[in-house]
Image 1 (cartoon, one colour):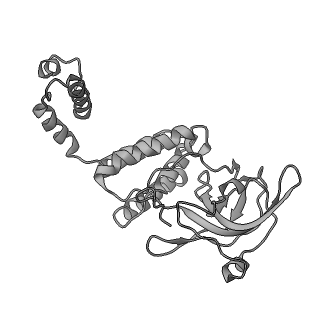
Image 2 (image 1 turned 90 degrees about the vertical axis):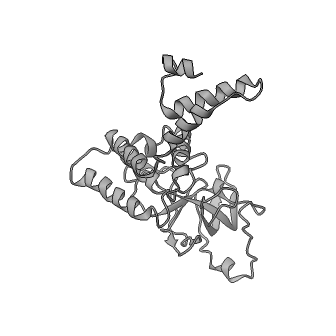
Image 3 (image 1 turned 120 degrees about the vertical axis):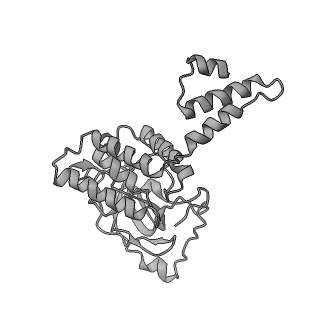
Length: 266
């Protein structure tokens, strides 16, 4: 479903009947919405995961209500005893349009359990918005993804270039990018399976990032910055704003600020 507070961002949710015992042996049970995340450390893992801490509050910005006990949706929840940290759910079923439907709860997952040799841990922070090919948003998308990486810099999703590319591709959505993303997923699998490139090879991300910029970066951005630089004038006595604008445009164009021509232009 769409997150109304962030443009073009979607979140996966599931209405789950839960029950778990905490460290003090207290039993917690209930029915509520949970945020779902995938195990991005393993692109082949199609399951979705959530934690007790990912419960969505009754009053929430997503506009989700809560079913009454006499509602059929309430009784359809598969009540099970779950660990306090993590809950495993079945693969998500995609639907047409902007909505998505979660699947039913499956067997509980031990918090210390590993999937395919990788520790299952949800990423922290705010993920980047979904990318749909808008050229003027391509740099913003990479900036947001980099910020997401900084928050999760020790996670295997980002320390392993293969998984980093796979994670980035998971944020591509829309008819203008689906074919490109599909081709890059095939390329990624070929690098690993056909050419035996190690999943830890940093060149995987270097090549992917370069291909992304070639495909989606606005090629007119540098020309626009060049034109703005040559028409830039100080407004009144506001020297601080002029310097800030000048430095920004010099960076966009790619000039060396110490070149004599740049100094004369200033």
